[in-house]
Length: 431
Image 1: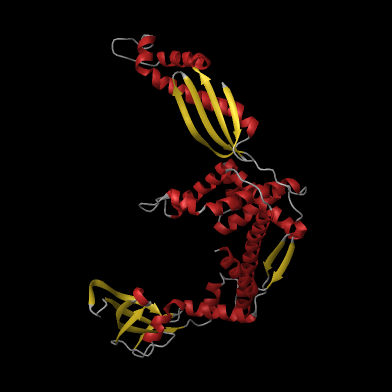
Image 2: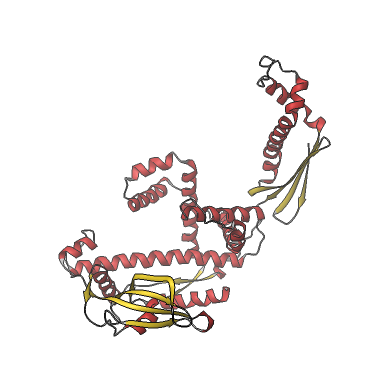
């Protein structure tokens, strides 16, 4: 079989396999003999059907199947070792006509990357120490969350919750038949309730208010009937609440404040770590210009569809356009592909990256604690799932890369508010 390769880009190749019937005949003959022993037709004992009849009735199917097997075998033995394809191989063309075979594949190859001077890479990192005021605000939110709403015969305030019936009106102010939402709960404290807060504050149960939302041609009109006004009774910060909210780790108010502060600090520290990983990956991708295989990008795009399907409970929305969705995610997929290759190169470059048994044990212990199961049970589960174990090892290696990068790149530490402002500017710039 003749194999030729055309360079499409520095990382994309078109592989063409060509053969004639005489090149494949030996494999065809073996396939016919195999099926001759299996095929049964009326009037013939098993294995005694004439070969001519087999070729006439089943020849096309047998040869097509054997061609697929031959192509797969040649690809795995000749192409894979030589070119080490990256991503999902794409078949471009398959032709078996006039006893001549031609198959074309598109494959990707690993890009050549030269890591730039890491000391010139600049990355912002959020640093935040939780204050006593933030702790007090969080405790206040806890008391509100654990409190209860009481019906009152009073006018609504900005801190009230109202139960209303909402009737949609047409442009002339007449009710739209069948467009009534009864028993809607509106918490006037929420940011999204600003328009309702403005119109309904000061109103009592039984009051009717006509209001408009939007502007111009997009203006919507409603008639809102207030059924109930509710007032929040906050929970009491007593021993019972402290014990339940701290999982028994705090016994009094001071211990509870300490517990809340440590949990909030853990949250900010983890958030800062996750944001740093994303930001340093973005900075490194931006600092290295190279092509990535289209087949690898396509594989990542396909994984996004699979993830969405899982999030939707295994069923994609009706009329979902997978190709359009993948097209919209291409920039993200290219970025992820680039980071994957950069991360691999860094893992090769950093000499002190080594996965030790204790690294895996530590990670599994953290996962077991998160899911509330014995660490030994989780360890045994991973031992029986080689693919998941390799994914775990890959995750640990990448975390070690980020640990080293913190000492290699130039980090600009900033408070959470300044960091958020910088992120908002960055997001606007990228739109």
